[in-house]
Amino acid sequence: MDKLMIRGGLPLKGEIRISGAKNSALPILLSSLLADSAITIANVPHLNDITTSLTLLGHLGAGVIVDEKLSVEVDPSTVTSQVAPYELVRTMRASILVLGPLLARHGRASVSLPGGCAIGSRPVNVHIDGLRAMGADIVVENGFIEATTHGKRLRGCEIELSLVTVTGTENLMAAATLALGVTILRNAACEPEVTDLANFLNTLGAKISGAGTPVITIEGVDRLGGGHYRVMPDRIETGTYLVAAAISGGSVKLKDTDPALLTAVIEKLELAGATLESGDDWISLDMQGRRPRAVDISTAPYPEFPTDMQAQFTALNAIAEGSALITENVFENRFMHVQELQRMGANIELCGKSVRVHGVESLTAAPVMATDLRASASLVLAGLVARGNTVVDRIYHIDRGYECIEEKLSQLGASIRRLTAAQGQQKHKEVIH
Ligand code: UD1
Image 1 (cartoon, rainbow, N blue to C red):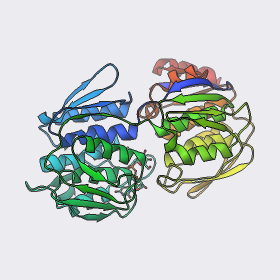
Image 2 (spheres, rainbow, N blue to C red; image 1 turned 60 degrees about the horizontal axis):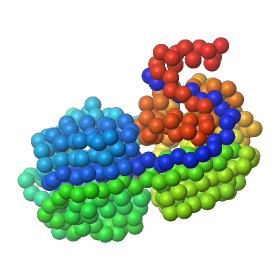
Image 3 (cartoon, rainbow, N blue to C red; image 1 turned 30 degrees about the vertical axis):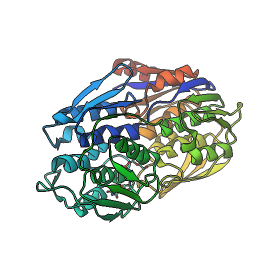
Image 4 (cartoon, rainbow, N blue to C red; image 1 turned 120 degrees about the vertical axis):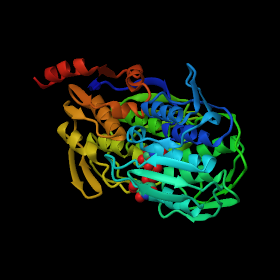
């Protein structure tokens, strides 16, 4: 397994480009199954989760062509299968996003249950309940969600989501585009990625309004056609590099991004003592070598502070001046990084769904293990400031969500290197002894 080795202590400095949003590209690619002709999607990030999605689309029979600039052409007209197998779904929970589109377009879908994952049990009951309300017959058996419309179209209806779920909203919104009549989703997720998906579907001929608010109205249409679409910038990648600059006392400019989507994160970085400036498609952060101040964090659905930035701010607080309370309200078990940060000298107390972080002046390098995507990012951030060489193991997690992380951090002046399995073992020994 590949590892990342980071030599801490260098303030980041320079400019990089932000990639297309993973959490936007995934639903967009998978809901291209709703259309009846070819679609071109630009600004798709080069990530393992995207490769899995393309493999899944290919497995279903769709034509997939990727060009060298990572524009992806999907031709859904050749789909022959409606089965999303365990081997693919298990590596990427977002595969559940084929359920609504397959059901709406082909009248049936058989999707392996995503099962548990490191950050909590993550059920899909809201997706299933919503599709049932639209007339689908769904049973869960032998580890699969078996859904059928018995040859009919889904029916539009009013659905009050029992909790705010991002992919749940996306699945139902996508399915409703081809339903008979009007669907109204209440208590919908307001995340920008939901809006991006709605804009994409509208480009193909869907009639969706209200995306980005808690009430989304979808007027069903008979068909969706082809089109071109460009995926929005990744706000979580942007936030992660801003924290990287802040934690290292550096100064960076991030291009091709959208600062308007980061209000809650920017506020916290300013409280931490950073100076931020932004334009329409760029943002810069300057820490002027200062140590950050501790900032309290409480995660909640958009526009509140994103759970996907919680681990990175835990790392920031670990070396901050003062102490901070971090509360995780979205997922039940999202503090796996805490134990690893403690191994690097962080002073963190775990208390239920919160942690109290008492900032220490410096961290020390240690071999650490990535447990999920954002947790692994927090370990890389900690490695940027730790004394010595930090080796982060199991970085396949990071490759699911951060495009070219070592290239981008190197471009900003970090000392970071990918070790292949064999090199990793050797370095591990050197670091320990
Ligand atoms: C999406 C994002 C993920 C982010 C999360 C919250 C994608 C591909 N992933 O994940 O990066 O961390 O939003 O912003 O977009 N829940 C249920 N039943 C359901 C659905 C969800 O109980 O049917 C619960 C979950 O267990 C969790 C909460 O609702 O506690 C929110 O989860 P959800 O918004 O669905 O997360 P994802 O869409 O999986």
